[in-house]
Length: 611
Image 1 (tube, helix red, strand yellow):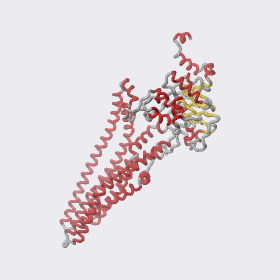
Image 2 (cartoon, rainbow, N blue to C red):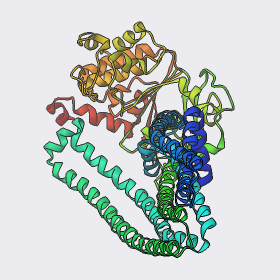
Image 3 (cartoon, helix red, strand yellow):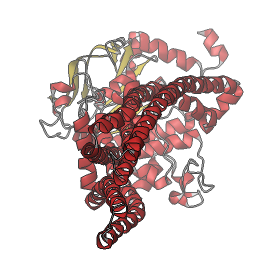
Image 4 (cartoon, rainbow, N blue to C red):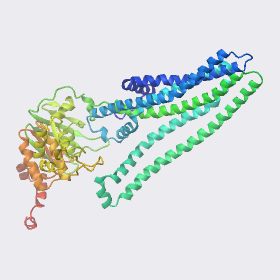
């Protein structure tokens, strides 16, 4: 099942929820089932005890022994009724806690199995994931409870209907007719509620997006400088207003259906009650049987109403659970459009010895997108440094994503020492790669943890070595708690330290460098936020660190890649030039023009004019 599918049937959804709850909390689930059955049978048993007690009391010669036994039974039933709600609440709460924890574990295990980026760039999948995160974690327990509630109400309803059938078949038909229309109306409302839930999910995500921008410290500068706060607020309120319109429409429909059908049911029930009283006064029914009819009228109507609400709840929970199951049941190793070409488990990933080869690689993100890469053929020799340059949108970042196997080529192939990447285990492949991305992450963790995330086996000495090489060791040692200082303030603590953009980038570089002994190092704009002196320092350290490792450097600043063994110029997804710096300058092509254009920015005006 792919992340976009949702075909989970009712029986499968309920059975999956029950199986999850059984594995997570078997004792609590058995307790809830036992208590649900007891609650279902108790009203019917109580009604029969009351019937026989009244019939004995109104008889000619009451049997006090039987009366005492019936009264004792009522006392026991009353005690059970008093204890049951507290026991049920505890069992249900325990079931909810344990099943939610198990559901959370399964959800994020499944998310971690998704090795590519395509699902996370799909609005439909993000909506599904948001629903799974917000409500899906509690849904297995809720769906199980809703199913048990349906079972309980069915048992109670059947018990009372069978009891009235013993007394009077016509009254049974009237009792069912009194509650039937409301039940059918609630079923239709349930479908409408689910439809509204699905429709408003996207609106709620957009509302949250605008609201998050209004309170995001990173966005605060532009929001205030450009004066777009009111614009974002208007959009946020617009989404909320649209949600309110749908919910108001549903509420009005609910009032009309429940009010009208409730009035009809009450009228029919009143007529049935009048008829039962007339039968009693005319000798056609005993006082005990009248009490049974009164109890049945209330219980059957209440049970059918509860059944309707239960079905509505089940419909809603199943819909949400389908989103949860759609994520949990998604095949994890399907990162790209041609993922079906291989499972990614055919060969062990060898250490790179010959190099990486791209053979006629074409790629686009979907059939509706233009080609990001067009027939790229390139060899990255073992131990060589390759620089990739080009304008925005030329395909540089896409090439990096394919090498990391976040996507697979739409056409063509990428070979690692002659083996197609699609035939290699994704996790093992990535263990042989280190990278810093242009859109690097800032983790609200300690400085040491921020760096160690690159290699969780790294010791303190290795972490400090990587920080030293990235030029951030001195900054981190001077923090209040040194490497144990918390970076960032998202957790609402005053102990968090805010670094500058360049310092954060150095931490990200250290995180990539701490992954020692990797075969391929990818540096995607690793110094974009640094000044010229810091950039020179970082690249000098990287050249020393690289040794005989294969490296790929992506940069807009051509001065940073002039020492690369091979420079590749991309334009509109195609390679238009390749060679070393000197050769490309002599060729006087696109690279030479770009290099001179950037170099002129550092020359005196008179020198530029003289040229």
